Image (cartoon, rainbow, N blue to C red):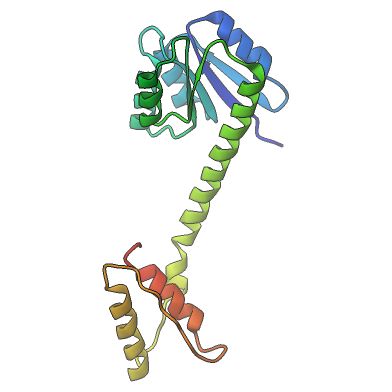
Length: 195
């Protein structure tokens, strides 16, 4: 069964919410509605939402307030600020607060659909990267070099010398096939200054 995409539209104007439902809701998408910022936060905490449209000017908690609460609560989904009065300052602040994008009314239906598709694709890619990163965290132990032979000790010391420098350096690893060049390369990478 394919998971439906859930999109929140938080706007105190029922006509805007209705327009979003008509534009975006179909077989693969559910549109959730909130009439103010506090209701938006409640929905975001209780529903596994994929994207949020937040009106800049809402009662109880404005769009920027919702963005700040999302970050505090660890709700890491793309959020798009909507406003009827776009200024450079509000656009800059929206992006600084972590908004995926910033759009002004009147809303263009075609642009909204394109924006939704792109935001969801970016979100899904980020989720896949997070999953891969957690998988990769288990790799270093699988690729550890082992051995007490004096030559292995020299290799350990060389890896330590190479990775102990504060700056990145290039390393050429030579040897015959099957001698463990890839293991040495992985250990240099795993113990390097950027890890």
